[in-house]
Length: 443
Ligand SMILES: NC(=O)C1=CN([C@@H]2O[C@H](COP(=O)(O)OP(=O)(O)OC[C@H]3O[C@@H](n4cnc5c(N)ncnc54)[C@H](O)[C@@H]3O)[C@@H](O)[C@H]2O)C=CC1
Ligand SMILES: N[C@@H](CC=O)C(=O)O
Ligand code: NA
Image (cartoon, rainbow, N blue to C red; front, top):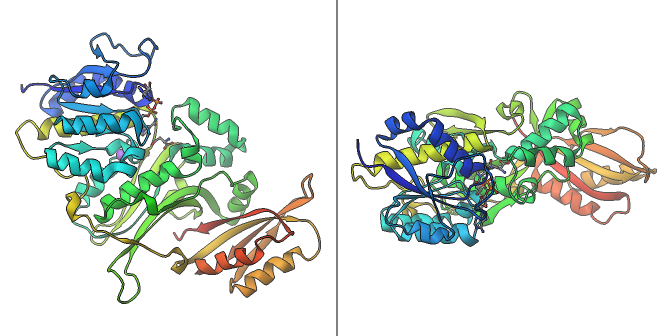
């Protein structure tokens, strides 16, 4: 049997400890699939004495992660620390500079610094892998980069944040309170160290930017992902959506359009927002911390990837799959393949697309003072902005402040018209809270 692949593991939280458990539990299987043993030689984390329920006695403890990455007896570094910058980025750069393969689950770091790291890895000839960074245990990076490599992909859509999906689907099923369900997601290890990254749609935005780069062979561009979270979604919206035949899900969507005549060949639109999903759409039945990605290939047709998007076991599964790839590919001296679909210098630079050009139906929820003339004011703004209303629902009694919720579904039309209607209503004393707009997905 070939020499072991010797790894240094930094970060021993949910995912890091999961990697240790998986390598111990599936040792023989991993060895046979990798063609050699994958052996942890050194570990590093913030707290040496904390009980993580895993045995660390066989590994060297290192207080300094960057120094650990430079050890001669380390072939690959596994970064499970988190954070776009700081110690994770220092570790990643050090590892690559020292000629070590790098595996990370850190979507924030890849979304912000992925091109720079991939370029450095190409120059140094080392593998850089991040399957766990997008949709946890689902092999969607590999699926799109390798399995669907022969296709032009026009659009990817996905439920990319397990915490938000757990919150929305649990609220829908049980009527439980937002804060209470978030606390449970944190206890189960799904949420980020700072859960506002989950709730505000930023974590899903990081993953969408990586996914879009892989799917379209485009330069990773997190700066142009528009991220809207689930903080404004209320139990009343979930109930109304259900009455209308929809579920609410946080969806990340990226597509390329041809652009206006004479413009650059393709423009990229990337956005994360809560959406109304019809029952006939594959994302409507994705519950709990499950993630799913739908990709449209020009020869494969619709592809659906679904599975656990968060948690120790599924995420460790993706991390160790990357290590198995590295163990195989570095054994016979082959060159490391590109981290994205093509080498960094060949990724397409795409301009951001204009969202207002897109058409669709929308759900708009207003919080209004319960007095005469309010509905007339709203419908007048819709008329002036050329938004056609399909239905208008005012349900329930006024709350303690005298406010009521009014929900509206529009006919299909340009998104810029809805934005214009809301601009006309901006500052109106009839609206007692900002309106919430959610697109209605097509099945
Ligand atoms: N938890 C999950 O389900 C998933 C997490 N990820 C990503 O995996 C990475 C790790 O996530 P978790 O294991 O959930 O985080 P965690 O918070 O449970 O563990 C982080 C580990 O890094 C160590 N650490 C953090 N900052 C440090 C510092 N400044 N110096 C030394 N050690 C430090 C901590 O001591 C801890 O051992 C993150 O990038 C996260 O976004 C990716 C997919 C799923
Ligand atoms: N916080 C993330 C963890 C996985 O990436 C999520 O909830 O999806
Ligand atoms: Na994945």
